[in-house]
Image (cartoon, rainbow, N blue to C red):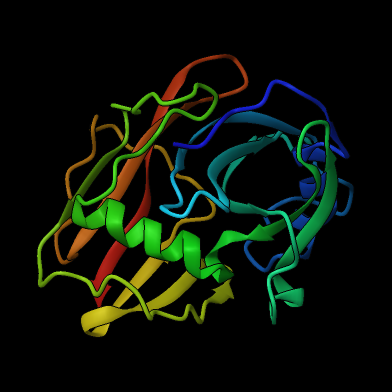
Length: 218
């Protein structure tokens, strides 16, 4: 299980995202810098215990209508070879030292963990508490078992989010801009092979729920 250290990060995760988010094609903010708050999320475990995996919901309140973004991140103790284009930034961790933060959709460790979660082989963990499952994360999958390894992510970003070709001719759609749904928890949408959903809080503390990831046949 990942250990959550109570320490400092310089710069913070939100400070890294303030510079990075406006460079994404799915960013909905204006010309000014986003004003971000951490609104929710969860973690997954790296079976090898080397890579931190977090699915963060960050809400931008710089525009009249706040926008919640899903940001999958990985944290590494050394650069990920060939992933310079996916680097969100580096930060100094008060316990672990220098950490490289990546857009997790480009990191094979995160993508493998996400597939394991969808299939039901991995369990979501609380975002800020050690060794604590997160019961609010719901998932579904119908199909053949995913291969355990050997999958190299090749994500594509557009205004609608991030699409990742996945095994068995499927595509993972990571919903970067979150749209609340009335159903709680959301069922697997019609026409999909699987999904992940969870709630978060708006700036006033009201609970919201959305689909985070859907899996479809390409």
